[in-house]
Image (cartoon, rainbow, N blue to C red; front, side, top):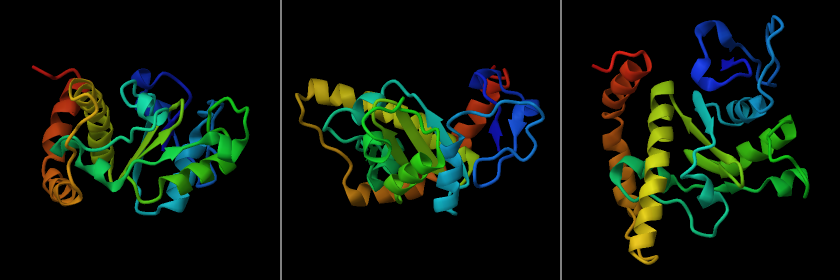
Length: 198
């Protein structure tokens, strides 16, 4: 399921479209699909455990796709970043002069391969893709990817490049604990989205 091509903040249930695993609308009914639906179709095809995907142009995250400094977990809520955060280089799959968009199945397949078993992948000069086992989990990961990126950039600035990141054991232990925290955060975000944040 993916919305028709429109501003995400305006999507209603009537805007949702069903797609097959090739990225084709099942019943378009005259609605225009997103150009980059192949991000979703090819990741779902390559990674059956993935049940939800967020693609965004998260401003604090984008810089980590264009520098040599990797995005790493700086706090427990970003622990899923400890799985590694690959950077997808579209030039390798699409040549030296693309428009940076994943607009074909071949580019989507290359992105899915680049993602591997990571929860987050960066698209150089474009944005990121976050995957999860549920909508709640992927939203949690997308929100905390942005927060971790802001915190990491600030830590690198004030620490003059010296930062103590979570080690692998800390990241894995925190990931397990955070599974119990997802619903709490989801309930708040859902209430705010539905205008019930009082």
